[in-house]
Image (cartoon, rainbow, N blue to C red; front, top):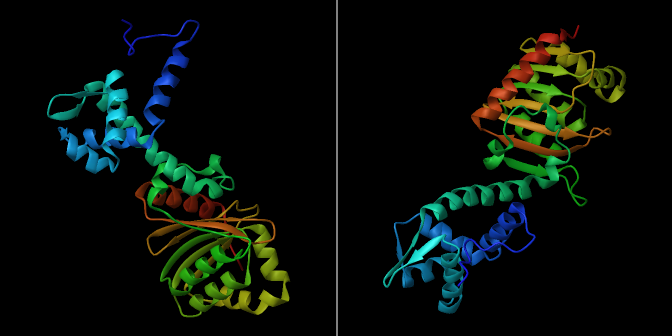
Amino acid sequence: MTDRRTAVTAGSSPLDDRVAEIALLVGSPHRVRILLALYERDGCTRDELRELVDASRTTVHRNVDALEDHGWITTSAVEYAITPAGALVTEELRDLVETVGLAAELRDVLRWLPREELGFDLRALSDARITVGTPTDPYAPIRRLADRLTTASAVRGLFPAASPATVDAVHSRATDGVDWSIVLGAAVREALESNPAYASRFEDLQAAEELDLYAVTGSVPFYLGLVDGEVQLGIVNGDAVMKALVESEAPAVEAWADEVFADYRARATPVE
């Protein structure tokens, strides 16, 4: 009798065999739940496993048989248990499930992020708050940013563009005497100096004693804010509309943001 755990289809490659094993593991959510349940416990009785998986007795039995046939779990008269090989696979499977969930959440944001500029593992954003503009509410990210800036006490920020909401927020706090440090891209500095709608407020920003205002000669590729211990990352299009705002308190993201801001600040000159 052929052992299904080692059977190889004629003409198949090692990759084909491995993909087939992966397909078996993830082909049913019930199998994933069974593996995760047994991985987290020393063993489960049939009734316990059925309750954990939340499936019918027939469904649990069918998927247990498939996993046992491939050597991922073992069964006895009283309980199920995961094998060492099954535990090894389930560790990776658990991480994959979490990564897929994060990627799905970030999917609309990742296409705009300058990946080559992000010096941290994207999995650090697993607990991030993400605000994305939609066709019915395209200004949700910029409104969220303005709300945070309006109440912030400590801010270091890189600004690639100007919008009425952010200019108003910065102006309202700068004239309150908060200790902020802001670096402007060349385009936003030009817009603030030349646009009559911003001119008087820009003069107030320049005159604010507690606001350190700088500018670089080139562009700033994204909005970056260190706001009261939280990192904000915003993607702005050519019309100064923010497509998405990502907010994170992860230490890895904060360390990266500190380094990026320090680099731009070192290359910037005071706005006179």
